[in-house]
Image (cartoon, rainbow, N blue to C red; front, side, top):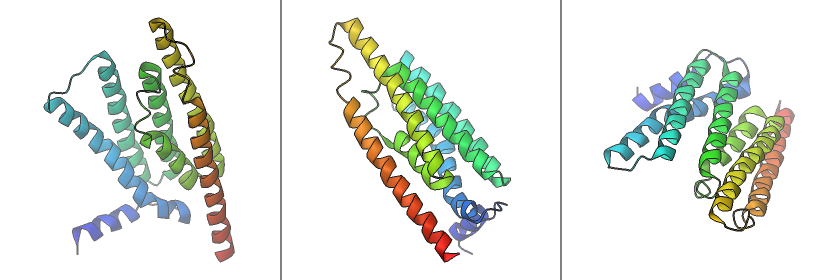
Length: 198
């Protein structure tokens, strides 16, 4: 048998009772493996290529390693049939790591890579449901508030007007609000279609 097919069958073999969770389990296991294995590889590449590691980067490195460790722990939980708590653990660590990173570096330095924040919304909504989606949205807005507060603090120390670091506040609210509403409507439509099909 093709090794990829065998690996796919192994991912689908997690002992999960709920049919929707069972269908979501393979892709979530892949995502958790990517986080658990590729974050350390990414840092090894950065260190090996002579990248500078300052105090801020050391802090982010420690956070990333913790995220990688908890991603592997979540993967192990799914393999034992504990699906939803595993996803909640991963999302909680994502939000905590984002909070710590934003508190250290601010929003402006992180705004180029929206993948971790958007991924948190997507997983919350598609895997855990609409209620989890809106909770994640509210928590993400708190994370952004922490980041903007760090930017304001830095601007104040440099004598820059406070309005400058807050220029992206409306864009963040509007863009993430729209993404959350679209996800919410899509999830509702999918759940209704599934109910009708059943």
